[in-house]
Length: 147
Image (cartoon, rainbow, N blue to C red; front, side):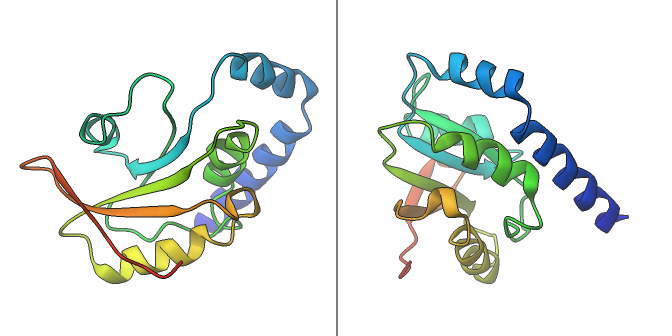
């Protein structure tokens, strides 16, 4: 079932990339915008992360992930990587990829997610800033890493 969903998402991603009408619409939508960050938040904390980090309208291009699960490689997650990560490359003032994780998410999930995000060609060269977040008090601490 997962293999079938992955294959379907790859096919949809490829058809979107080759759809000139969609690409034209994305170019129009990008006019006048210049998000500086790509933030990949837990699906249940997406809005809260924007508030915690003080992002205003248009500051960040957003994507979501499943909590307590490793962020998949580009081959395993065409929706994320052919969508927000790929479209993010069109904006000029990119500063970083922001990855917030809840404090109680396993360290191995964080480390493997970091490694997997490094495989994406459209994100190469961008700093990856990882945070451990205590959502009860709204505090984020930087998670040091060597990537």
